[in-house]
Length: 387
Image (tube, rainbow, N blue to C red; front, side, top):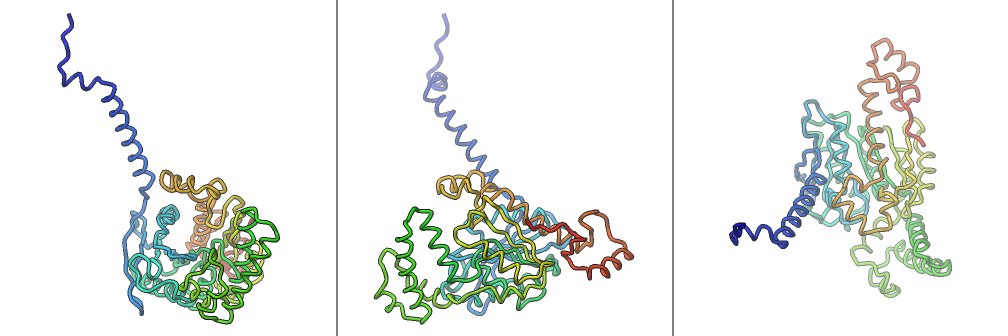
């Protein structure tokens, strides 16, 4: 006869116990996966920068190991109450930049996180001053390469960055992602495209535009919020703070400011962008910025935020990807394209010839300077990222 197992041992062979073990293993596997996917190969430090109106808080990201000085990319946010990491959305790009030898500096907008003030009280000039303050702070850090401090900005940053480079000609490069040209035309385009995507009729779109034009007239006349309330539709009501922000910035137009660029400009546009008319943006950038300074990348499957087309129309898939696979949250080409652009500049600055990948001796360097005026984006020196 077999001996009967003690009650304590029999517990380990019950179906319930086996089920609990299986669930525990699955939970541990999920937690391990989340930890791995959300651990980035870089070093983050919270920082605080004094300003005339208080403190601007943010995050400085560095390569985990660096012996030489590193370049710096200062992030300029788009519209909205954005914190330093964009709720974690910037981290895949920060990691790429860190692996390429660049630090990233990004601030909480005023009134967000620990930053003083209220971003809705700001003009585009105010925003530019915040960026200039951040750059001045960063230049005092001994590990920052003074010759490789540049800007990355998205959407509304297209009205901020030209103002920054106008006041600071030492900016080494500018990366602009989905920037608009004119505040008013951008708003009209966005309204039309969103309504078309949602299936509204032409009559409904026209009616909305007529109402928006009424509101716009009040805005341009700097009407009070009480005057706006008299005609406002309840389902499209603008808050009082937002009204003030729009009144202060509605005349924003990037066109004239684009002539201020004196260093390489990389424009990144998404083919699925319904916020910004990317064809207008590209046309104006090409008109106003010298060909030798401008490179353009078009990502046909990316939207305004560089999300891939597979995620654009699914909030659930977007959040799931952000949680379980954050490095796939952006278009596959986007991150690599940014690094390639920076590497092309760094290769020339070393100096290196990108086609041949060998150091330039003094005789050849003099020859290249004479033949090309050492234009940093001359076709002889690098392959253009223009497609």
